Image (tube, rainbow, N blue to C red):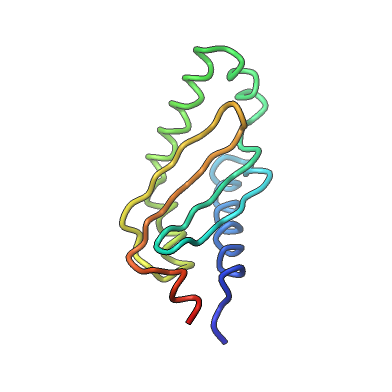
Length: 122
């Protein structure tokens, strides 16, 4: 029986949460993944640590948090991409990430080599 789109999205979200908990000692409060054509988009809520929540109230602190998170993402981009590849069985062509210090959210976008949404409909 083929896997459903919702189940695959949930598997990706769970894998990301597990990885981040192992990497940072805590993961996001919530993760939701969306498969749209050849894109895998994950939105993480509640990603800031207690210390980061204090830092983002100051201009310099906000910049530091964004820089630190960007460096961490670059350091572990291969691992993030491998998660998507292992769960979807598609090759990741590129990935993009950004964090909102205002909302305490992060978004990850992965472009894969197939129209995954269409494949899941078949």
